[in-house]
Amino acid sequence: MRVVVTGGGGFLGQRLARALLERGRLCDREGAERTISSLVLFDNAPVAGPLAEDRRVEVLKGDIADPRTLARLIAPGTAAVFHLAAIVSAEAESDTDQGYRVNLCGTLCLLDACRALEVPPRLVFASSLAVYGGRLPPSVGEDVALSPQSSYGTQKAIAELLLADYSRKGYVDGRALRLPTVVVRPGRPNRAASSFASSMIREPLSGKDAVCPVGKETVMALISPRRVVRALIHAYDLPESSVLDRRSLQLPGFSVSVGEIGEAVRRAGGEKAYRHILWKRDGAIERIVSSWPQRLSAERALSLGFVADKGIEEAVEAFIEDDLEAQKALS
Ligand SMILES: NC(=O)c1ccc[n+]([C@@H]2O[C@H](COP(=O)([O-])OP(=O)(O)OC[C@H]3O[C@@H](n4cnc5c(N)ncnc54)[C@H](O)[C@@H]3O)[C@@H](O)[C@H]2O)c1
Image (cartoon, rainbow, N blue to C red; front, side, top):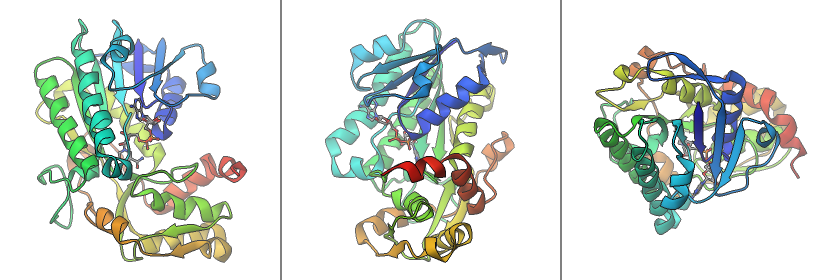
C-alpha cells in the first residue's frame, strides 16, 4: 500500500509518519488490513532524521500548489493520503497570497491529482476549529454554521467543501477532521495565533520564559498530539458508509482556561517554572483566539470511536514523556 503524508516534515506529519510506520498497516476500502509498503513524506521544507532512514520511507520535497509536482506525488497506486501541509493561522492572515496559494490552491491541486488516479484514494484532511467564528453558542459542534473570522479558517472551510464535493463525485473518499489546538507542540514557537498555548507549558518546563498574550480567563479547546495522531489514523480506518452524508467531523477536545494551564505548569514544574510565564496581553492575538470555540460538542466523533484527552494534565504528561528531554537540549 502506498501512503502519502503532505506536510510530512511538520510537527504532526512527523508524528503521524512514526505512528504509521510502527503500526505498519491501514484498512483498505473493503475494511481489510493492508501492509504499508511505501510511505511518502512530502514537504517544501527538508525532512531529516531517523524516519527518512526507514526503507519504506520516500522523501519528496516540493510545493503542494505545483500541479506537476503533485502528479509525481500522487503516483498510480497511491491508496492513502493524509493532507497536513498548510500555512498556519497567523501567517495566512499576514500573507494573504501565500495563505490562499498553499491552503486553498494546494488542496485543490492535491484533489485534482487524486482525481486523475484510476482508483480513488482515501484522503484524511486536517481542518481546524478556525472554520467556526463570530457569535458562537456555549458549546460548538458540527451543526454550527461555518463562519470563519480569519483567512486560515476560510481556507480550511472551503477545503472541507471541496473535499466533500470531490468525494460526492467519487474522485476521492475524503474525511476532514476539525482539530482543536494541539498542545503541547515541541520545538520553537511557530506563527499560529495559538502558539502561546504550547509555549506557556513548553518553555517554563525547560527553564525559559514564555509570554502569554491573553487573559487568564480565556478558555481554549485543546487536544494532545498523541490523540490527534490516533484520530487521523482512526479517521482513515473508518468505513466510507460512516462518513457518506457528512465528510467533516468535529474532533473532541478538552476545555481549559489559560489560568488553569498556568496551574498545570506549576504542578508539573513548581514555582520556578510558573514564574517563567509572563502575562502580557496582545490585542491582535486576543481577537483571533476569542473568535474560536471554547467548548466542543463532538457526539458524532465520540460515537464513531474517537477519544478525547482527559484534560490538561494528560497533555502536559505526554509532553514530559515524549518531548521534554529533546526540548531542553534545544539552545
Ligand atoms: N497544530 C495545531 O494546533 C493544529 C490545529 C488545527 C489544525 N491543524 C492543521 O494540521 C496540519 C498540520 O499542522 P502542524 O501543526 O503539523 O503544522 P506544521 O506547520 O508543523 O506542518 C505543516 C507542514 O506543511 C509544510 N508546508 C507549508 N507550505 C507548503 C507547501 N507549499 N508545500 C508543501 N508543504 C508545505 C510545512 O513546511 C510544514 O512542514 C495543518 O494543516 C494545520 O492547519 C493544526
